[in-house]
Image 1: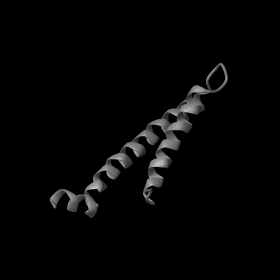
Image 2: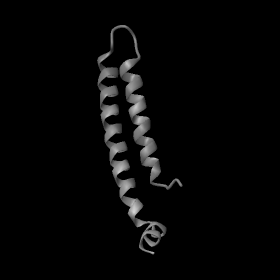
Image 3: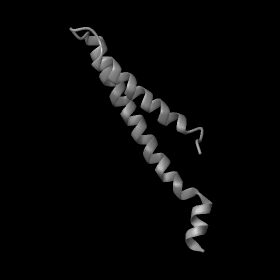
Image 4: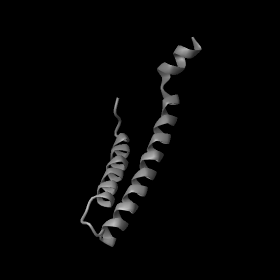
Length: 72
């Protein structure tokens, strides 16, 4: 089930995809701005996506249904 916070995961993944597109596509001579913005967007998106994954994995312990099935 998707939560409102899952939007951060989608934003991070979108930033990684946009950064990769900016970095790898372009004219024969890469423009320094595209190269710089693409690299920054990819790394920032990876950080946001990784942080969201760790946060989301930590919230699985908060589900009461999982706790009761293991205890009982």
